[in-house]
Structure formats: structure tokens, C-alpha cells
Amino acid sequence: MKSRKEIISLSINDQIYELAVEPQQTLIEILRQSIGLTGTKEGCGTGECGSCTVLRDGKPILSCLTLAIECNDCEITTIEGVGSSDSLSIVQQAYLEKGGVQCGFCTPGMVLATTALLNKNSNPSDKEINDSLDGHLCRCTGYNKILESVAFAAEKSSGVEK
Image 1 (cartoon, rainbow, N blue to C red):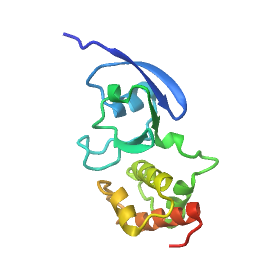
Image 2: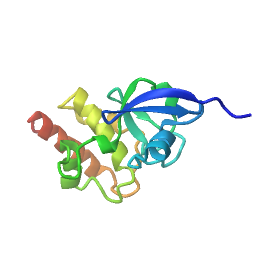
Image 3: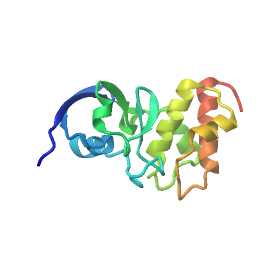
Image 4: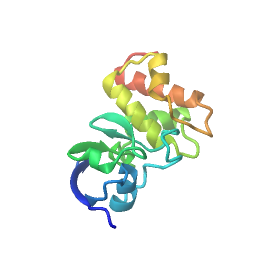
């Protein structure tokens, strides 16, 4: 017996999509397979690594654990909606300048978590930075460069030196 598809409306990176989705389809499946936004990565599929992080209404969520129908009428931001190849966001530029990127697999999720943090608090404490990246795994950089990148982005966005 086939599942009954439901029509949902998503605003993804400021573009509206009307989609027929199966009730069990996750947001990451819709982003990658239906829309073709492949910047969001699926690492573990169990919500343990943070690679699939996107913003829903400005707050970070794990798209591998979020059903697409739960996002009906929500605003979704993926890495493709943050900066551009011609004009990186402050966060992307900070990760680049401070070496917070190596293989890049985890980077989209971390950039979005950082963006959400700085949108909420442009001058976060070290603890707030650590808390915002809790649950994000990186097998390449060793985290120090990532934490330096976030602090540098905070400094650039707030004008307050850490």
C-alpha cells in the first residue's frame, strides 16, 4: 500500500516550493533529492554528527531527523542560502581565514549553527560558542580552528574583540 502524499509549501533560501511529500520523508531527502540542494550533508542519519544542520525559521535543526511535513509554511535556510561564491558571509569568510575548514563535509552544518548563534548574540562567550557547536562532529580540524573561526566571525560581526 502506497503512502498518501501531502502538499507542503516551503520557503527555502527565499524561494517558495510547493511539493508533494510522503509523510515519512525527511527534510534532508527533500532538499537533496527533490530540490537538488546538495550542500546539506547527511553524515550519520541519526542526529549525532550535525552535518545535516539547516535553519528553520532562523533556528538550527537536524534535517535528517526532521520530517518535511513538519516544515510546512516554514522558512528554511541551507548553506546555499548563506553568502555566495562571489560574496562569502562573515561566517564563511572567518572559517576560511582561520582554517576552520578542511575536507568541508561538516562545514555547512557548522556554518549554519554559527550563523544562528551570531544572529541571536553577536558577542557570544566561549561557553556559548561551545554550546552552539555541541553535537557537531569534525574528523579533520580538531575543533580549535573551528572555535577560533566562530570567535573571529563574532568579532567581525560585532566589532568587539574577544
